[in-house]
Image (cartoon, rainbow, N blue to C red):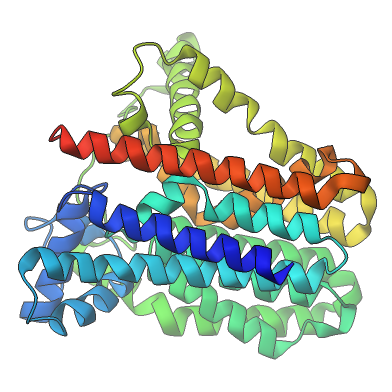
Length: 410
C-alpha cells in the first residue's frame, strides 16, 4: 500500500515539474498578473494597486510566500526566478496530497482502495497538476481545505476527540484559506455545520466555546486583511473588476423573463464542470466538436454522487462525511454562480475555483470508483484505474506543451 502511495506522489511530482518547464513564462492562468503581485511584494515591500495587477483583489499570503522565493533567487535570470516561484505551488500540492492520504488512513483504515483512488484522483487531476506547475493562489486554498479536512476527519473519528485544540487548529486552517482566496469561505461554513450536527452531544456551552476559539483564531490570521479592505475601499471584500452578467436587473422583468436568469446559470454550471475536469482552454484548441467531451464530463459527477450514496449507506460516520463533502462542493459551485452573475462574467469557465474543494471531490470520486470494483480484485483494478488517470494527466500535459509551442496563452 505505501509503495503505491509513493508511486502516486512521485508521479505527481514528475508531471507537475514537467508542467513547470513546459508552460511558457506567464503561460498559466492569469500568471503574469500573479507574478506581478509577487514582484511588487518582493521588490517594493508593499501591496500592489489594482492599476498594477487585477490580482490585487486577492489576499496576500500566497504572494508573500512567493515573494520570499523571488527575493532569495537574485542569482537566477528572470525566467529562472519565475520557475523557482512556481515550485511553491508544487510544494503546496504535495502537502495537500499528504494531508489527504493521512486523513483517509486515519478515518478509513480498512479501506485501502478508497485511499488509493481518492489520492490518485486528486494527484492526477489535470487542472491540479497544471496549477501545481505555475504561479497561482488556488493551490494555497486547496492546502488550507486539505488541512481542515484532515483535522475534521480525525475529530469525527471518535466522539471525544473534538476539543478546543482541534477548533483552534481548524480556525488556523480557515485563516490560511481566507488569507489565500475567498473561495475558502466554505471552511467556516463546514465548521458551523459540524457544530450544529453535534450540538446535542456536545452541549451548548462547548459549542459556543469551540465556535469562539475557531472564530478568534480565524480572525487573528486573516481578519486584518478584510479590515484593511474596508478601510481602503469601504468593503470587506474588494473586487478590482466588476463585469457582472446580471446588473441592475428589475425583479419584475426577471420574473417575466426567467430565461434571462436561468440560461446564464446553465451556462456557468456547464462550463464550470467541463473546465474543472480538464483545462478547457487547452482541450478546445484541438477538438472541433466538444459535444462528446462535454457529455463525458457530465457523466463524471455521477462518481461523486455514487460515492456519497455508498458512504451514506455503510456507516453513520460515512454518512456524515459524505453529506459534509457533498455540501462543500455544492455550496462552492453556488458561490461560483453568484460570483459570475454579480461580479465577473469571465468566471463562466470557473472550473479552477473548484480546486478549493478538490479534496472533497477526490474522496467522493474515490468512494464511487471503489464501489464499482468487485471485492476480490479491488486493489489490482484500482491500480489499473490509477494508471489510466496518470495516462490522461500525461495526455493533458502533452496538449499543454503543443499549446505553448503554437504560441498560445490563456
